[in-house]
Amino acid sequence: MQPRNMIALLLLALLAVLPLLTQAFDQRYLLSVGTRIVIWSIAAVSLNMILGYGGLVSFGHAAFFGIGGYAVGILSAEGIQNGWLQWPVALAASMLWAALVGALSLRTRGVYFIMITLAFAQLVYYLASGLEGYGGDDGLNISRSRFAGLLDLRDKATFYWLCFALLCGTLWFCGRLANSRFGTVLRGARANELRMTALGFPVFRYRLVACVIAGAFGGLAGILIANEGAYVSPAMMSWVKSGDLIVIVVLGGIGALFGPLYGAIVFFALEETLKPFLDLLHKGWGEYWQIVFGPLLVLIALHARGGMASLLRRRDG
Amino acid sequence: MEYLLIQVLNGVQLGLLMFLLAAGLTLTFGIMDLVNLAHGSLYMIGAYLAWTFITWTDSFLLGALLALPATFIVGVILEVVVVRRLYGRDHLDQVLATFGLILFFNDLVRMVWGPAGKSIAVPAFLSHTVQILPGVSYPAYRFALIVVGLLVALLLAWLVARTRLGMLIRAGASNRRMIAALGVNIELLFSLVFGLGAVFACLAGLMTAPISSVKIGMGDDILILAFVIIVIGGIGSIKGAFVAAMVVGQIDIFGRAFLPELLKSFLSPASASAAAPAISQVLIYVLMAGVLVWRPTGLFGQRP
Image (cartoon, rainbow over all chains, first blue to last red):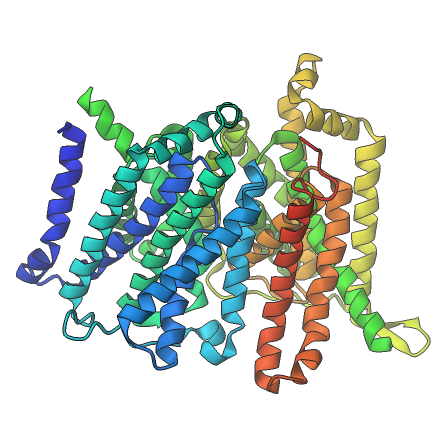
């Protein structure tokens, strides 16, 4: 076991007992922060698969939040609250959308790819805000998915553990995938697409499959977000959320398995600590925390490409 | 018929405004290979500066004339302090850094000007309507927007095609390293072009202000549309940006003006008026997807 994996496992162990800790110290709010960290980690791990391993800068990943979330929301509004039905439908919808977007956008390169993925996400955003029957711009209050007799998602700790278990599953799956032949081809295509094509690999098809897998996990995160707040709205897939996801992936370390987890922890920890810290310096400054956070992102982009994962790696020597 | 004409003019006016934004973006992308998400922030800052100067001088024209050079200075400072370091970097770095700049500028503006939106009044000398055809009148301010927009578009076309600066811009777009090797001060050129883009963004922002409002994040959504326009037109192509902006402007206005009536025939009036703007936005993105599938580098983009 390498030391840097030890750090990740320690973090996971800490996350595993988080509900017990927050209960012991009576910090209910921390549990909701923890839930958000875990859910966003799932989405970031999936984005990391196409962005990190595949080298494809997708700027529309938050669309899957919306598709997963709205699939649950619309079914719930139509009276179907059975999770065993809702979740597969939501996942299938996300994968279908990923396949469609992937098939069209993978024809383009570089900045065109960034923009076309962004545009498709905006398309879903506007579609959702046009759904007057399902809340339109204001969003939709839903009731949480029901898993009769098995789980009660209304219980905060139960829900947290479910998210955590799904995150572990996602990490396990994506870790296996990254080290498989499939992952190697994906990384090879990032390094040199022409050479991989010359070697006889259908690069397009590999990338498309990667997009569909990433879409499924992105949709899963969307399902969880919808269930966390019992609420879906177009705002959950605004392009700023896609930007936040990229920030998390880069912050954690592109193409590192546990990078997105580190990234999500740092991202939400910064948000939660910068506000009170600035308020401490001067009353009312906390509201403007992004004045500090924005330039921090610029510095990270300029000087810390490897993110947290490479910092940890460097210390291992 | 009159209604149609007025809506077409509205589309032209919206298209020209978006062209002003897209022109700056496509120049910076074409020459410096820079994905600048913060371009919308310059649009917002330009509008806020215009509000400040117009309130201060109590004159729309004077305020506008002060806001343009002020935004130019903001643009040049931004280029020297941050953006310059992003040339030649990975697109992902550029997206991340300029995304950070958006967050920074949104909160900075909120801190300086407060969270409430501002409004700029339509200048008195343009608050009447003009007869464009016998019996068809059109607000003078919107008409002036079209005139100014067309003039700026012509000016830009002249600048790029006929002047020394334009020659350097075109040379820079086709081979950056070569013109640096020929002894052109490329850093100065980049700063100038970035500042020029900022001026266009400011112009778009201050001209939009009287017909909508000046608010935080006003640049964020229109920025995406500007990106859609330069992607449809082909990145780096001024001509492409113009054509695409005109088309997108028409689609947008069509969706707002005619789609509700069309939808009412099979939807309830309330859902029709809610769905129409959404559908017109969707149409714009469908157009973009279609163009990219047909021509992966846009209508007028350079083939790889």
